[in-house]
Image 1 (cartoon, one colour):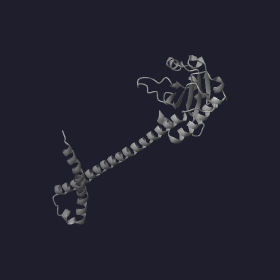
Image 2 (cartoon, helix red, strand yellow):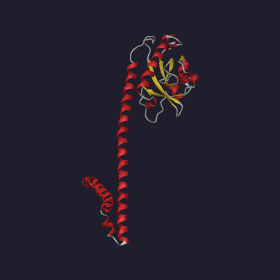
Image 3 (cartoon, one colour):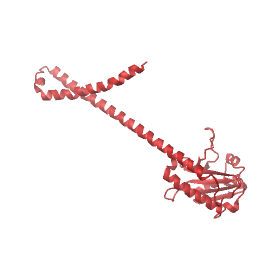
Length: 255
């Protein structure tokens, strides 16, 4: 088993060994070029061949060590730059989530005061073809599926994503199987009577990348029906989220 001292000694020896190999590899051909009489005096063919093999061997070792050191250097650079990029992505993601908390705090014109509201931002995940909730975090156990996840074209959230426009539901259909909610989803949304979902588009505004959804524990048809103040407020909120999201991070970073 190695010790710290032996490991440190080994690290110190390696640069010296590299220098020595370099001197031998570069020095032998140079010496014989500058002093050809030395090589001509070697009359014994086996001895001459030995010198040549030694020179070639030194060059091979030098080349191998040089390549290895170059690869290690490149790997170190990639590790450092990769860690920096990942750290920057994490800071941007955290900042975006803080902005989401601030945006949905308080009241907005058009959204009635009094009822309890629950906001949720979804990002489309192409792999399972579903809309995954990325904010807020329910902090569920790793083994539990998030009941807020929706397959495309299911629930108000999935239908808004496919239609590319707001989709609102009121009353019992918010939590029954009218819009193909799973049993877990029906249980989760049992206490809600209003849902309004608005698609969030990419930077160009041409392709939906997610959905902003709000649910309420009261039936609010007059506020959240099509072209009503509540729907307009959620639409404005979705446009704000789109601007912040696409300017700060890649939506996929939230998945």
